[in-house]
Image (cartoon, rainbow, N blue to C red; front, side, top):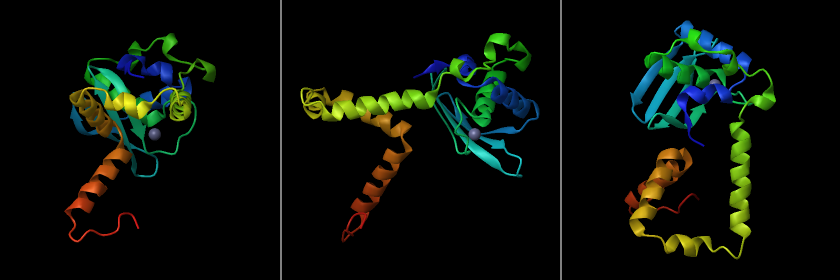
Length: 182
Ligand SMILES: [Zn+2]
């Protein structure tokens, strides 16, 4: 699922990309927090407020994006597009450098991340009911440090799992222990 940051234009509709460019050119994108693997942004909306965008990177490839706006159309929202474009601009790119190929007017030309995710969900469901493939036995036969690395990576990428772990640590710290999630 990781892709070079310059390729984000294949995951966004042309009209949305144009709005992303406007947002960057009007300086509506603010970096809140940034290192080589992670960046957080506030992107202004038209209600004197902002949306929060999170981007994760691995050696310059985008591995994860999230925006808390309500956009549920095909491809990335304009805020995520603006955040990724902002990173490119920091690296010396100029919106004038976009070419006709960057603008996808047909929805079918846009790589749909949600569709990708749906495929994954289907696959996970399939794994969970495939009795010939013993997932738990397979995992328990793997080297422990490899499994732990995998789990840590998963923790980094999933807010839900982080919350569960935090809840568990809180639960462990309580004495006497309250009934969990009652
Ligand atoms: Zn958004």
